[in-house]
Every structure is written in C-alpha cells, then in structure tokens.
Image (cartoon, rainbow, N blue to C red; front, side):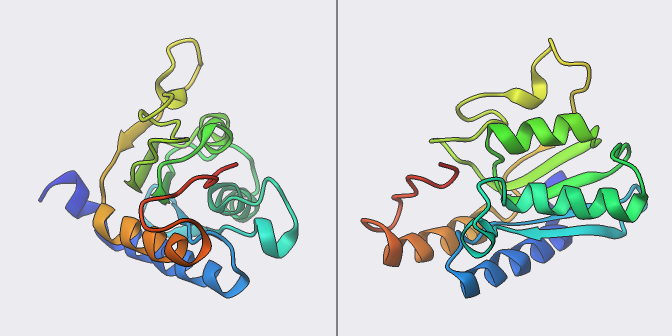
Length: 164
C-alpha cells in the first residue's frame, strides 16, 4: 500500500465536504482533521461566499473545529487532509496548529504553498514542519474543481482566484 492509498478514505471524506460547498456557490474545497488514532475531529469546506468571510477556507474551518473538539489549539499528532494544496494562509495555519502532516489531493500551481508556488510548511526557519503527502485522489479533486470552474470562470483548467 502506498502512502496515497493509505490516505484515500480520509480524502473521500474531504471530497464529500468539498461537494457540500457547491450548495453555497463556494469553490469546492473540503478538509478533514484526523486525530492520531484516525478519528475525524474536524470537518470543513469553503465558506467564503456563504459566511462572507475571507478566511473561510476549508482548512481553517476544519482546524478550528478540531481545536474546539480537543480543547486546545495545538493539534500535535493530527493530520490535515484537504482536496487542494493549501494556500499560504492555510499552510501557515497548519504550521501554527502543529499538525503532524498535511495531506492533499490536487496541486495548485497558481497559489499552492506546500511545494507548488511556495513551500511554507517545509521552511527551515519555522519551528514546526509537518510531513507532506501529496497527490491523494488528485484526479477526483481536480475533476471537481474543473467542473465548478467550467461554469464559473473561463473554462476547465482556469482555477484563477482559487485562494484570492
């Protein structure tokens, strides 16, 4: 079993969250936070449009819920699983929350901060660097985003403004 196979069940949960964002015309990005023993302790989907919140990214929503469930902001031993590579804000939030790993599906070459455009989570100047697992169910994650943007932007593959 490859690392990407190991994370496929959690990514399916994140994809379900992403699909829920479609109801509010938000970009379909979803996230879950798993405790060290694999229990889902946080769920999130983009809510920027629904909540009129510029910080309403799936990762932030899921991290907040997980912190409430744990009763502390430190999410040591936890994994953040998200359908799209986190932006700088979300990658920073993962570092600050001290998650053990960031698992993502599709790469975001325009705004990704976990290796594509920037690499916030592996910056040696920071005091915490989570493990990174990428490409988990990337085809499914990309297809969901491309279908959304085919009706909201110029066409498939145009994901401009994902994290803007």
